[in-house]
Image (cartoon, rainbow, N blue to C red; front, top):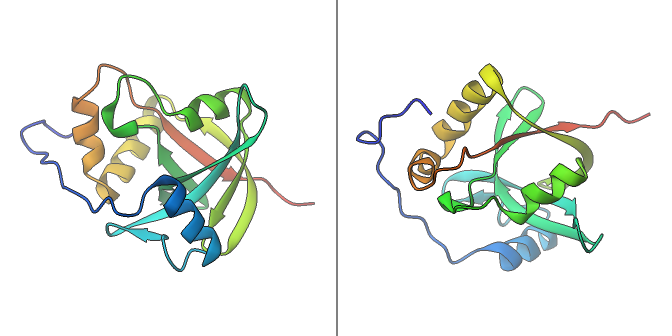
Length: 151
C-alpha cells in the first residue's frame, strides 16, 4: 500500500443497505438500487460454498481495469479473509452481476506489480481500503474477475 497512515482518514459510510438486503434489492431491481452504494459501484459475486457446494452471493465494491472487475477481500480489515474469498480459492469459476448483466468469470488473486497497481486503483475508488489495511497484519487480497469468453 502506498498511502501513509497519516494521510488516510476513515470515511464513515451509510450501512443501512448491507449484505442480504443489499443483494435482494440489487437482484430485484437489476442493480438500479444497490449498484451505487456510498458513492461507489457495487456488483454481485456468486461463489460456490467450499463446504456446502451451494451458491453464495455477496455484494462487493468494485473498480474496473479495462474489461476486468477488481474486488478487494478486506472484510473491513478483519484478521481473517471473507468467506467469498475462501470460496473462490477452492472454485475460481464464479458468476458476476453488474446492473442487469450476469456473466461467468474466472477469479485470480493479483500478485507482484499487478497487486500494487490494482490495490491503488481500488483504493482510489474506496479510500477506506487503506484504513482497513492498517487494521490487520494480513495482506489484504486483490482479486481480478475476468469475464469467461462465450463460445
